Image (tube, rainbow, N blue to C red):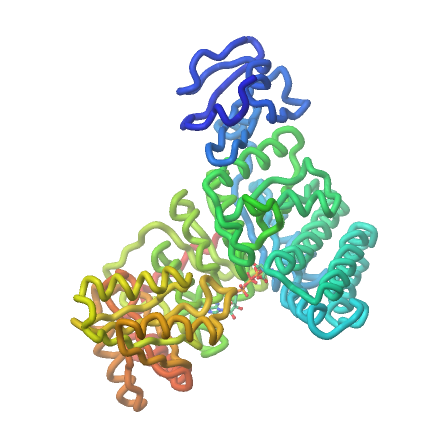
Length: 572
Ligand SMILES: Nc1ncnc2c1ncn2[C@@H]1O[C@H](COP(=O)(O)OP(=O)(O)O)[C@@H](O)[C@H]1O
Ligand SMILES: N[C@@H](CC(=O)OP(=O)(O)O)C(=O)O
């Protein structure tokens, strides 16, 4: 019998139906019999209701994995007018309480023409509390019942369930398993990245269950969907309602990436469920399944944005909406300057740069699927739904654009590396960068001269991993074999997101502002990105700089030039 392994190398889906009995070639789309496919792929599991219908098989060449779609699913994907239309992601602040959940339900229902996929984060600050609970369990308590954060999480979820008029039993198993897990961590006195991911997954599992139950309670048919498989089995959630967000090849816990095959898995599951039994899917954000370990992984803090854009691309939806607690992407972090204003339009490149360089409002990787699928992303405020928000698209008219937003990334480490000329310049740069590659540390901003290089190190590979002193010592020790190295800590990157074509105007203003405030720029990088100029200053000067820059660019005579005016149409 041939197994799925023999299907490796197939680039296109194979089609097969009950009537066509045998496969001829496996190199192009083929019509095969159901019998042939079960013969070909011993492991393939075909949903009972699909037997006798046309099926589409997608082979995952790396994993010996086979996905099956019914032909009606495919027709649903391609033709139905009643198909899933957009994805709406609601962050923790949008679903922080029962009242918030009621408002979100009302908001969703205010778009009766949409058939949305809903992605939810954990309620409020649940993820932070779970991480703290895990750290306490691993360090200082002998029993989970002593952990205040566990009480907080229980109380928050019980209160929400009670106030929504639901039965507490919908989360009883989860809370019991959570306590058991914390006791396990406490017994081992160890919180590994893997167990940390499993621990935080309880947040999204519970918020989605509660919200789906509430929608059903008010007569809106909804289905909770887990973004991972293994934890669903552990949590005894019906396997039928699960699909897989595969994480990176390496199973990077706390920091997973989306594998290509995720998109078809998402489409397969969500459309399959929708066609066989239409109900609003309520999907756990943030969670994935490790490819090698099959364990629960997370997509990095704020990863529900990435879940939403992945679903958007997987299903080829019309629009991706991310609902937050601010009126869109703002001209700077409102926690630094309360006068920050919404930015009406952004390109994917601008949004990606802004997110990567520290704007908490979007997950750093979240623009990738949207850009690849060319699906507009709208950032909206669930507390102020009439605000137009920010529309992020592939391109926009940049002719009048100067500066769009100012972003701050604090606590950055900078290295000044001067060659001791033991290596020629080619060898020198190569050696410097291979050192970082070997140590798994990514570099953010770079400036070079003939014999020296200044660069900043990303404090976390994405967001989660702090660069610890020992890692920094290793970097310096390695580089000192070929160079003199100066390690400068407590620096900040101020990123000016906008139209780099107008750099002379931008930089003229920036240096005026800095001179007036007595701030010296320690490093500058411009040109590599067409939408970002990065400046390095001391941490303790950085917030003052952002405020002064904001005033100069967005609140002075220049503001008329900077604002590309033209507001968004007030439509969701
Ligand atoms: N440039 C920015 N624009 C908008 N919000 C920002 C910006 N920089 C930082 N923020 C912060 O990001 C928060 C929204 O992101 P996040 O907390 O991840 O939302 P959610 O949890 O709702 O998905 C805002 O409350 C705001 O404090
Ligand atoms: N709950 C996760 C994932 C997430 O996306 O959250 P939010 O949408 O609230 O930023 C976190 O706190 O990181």
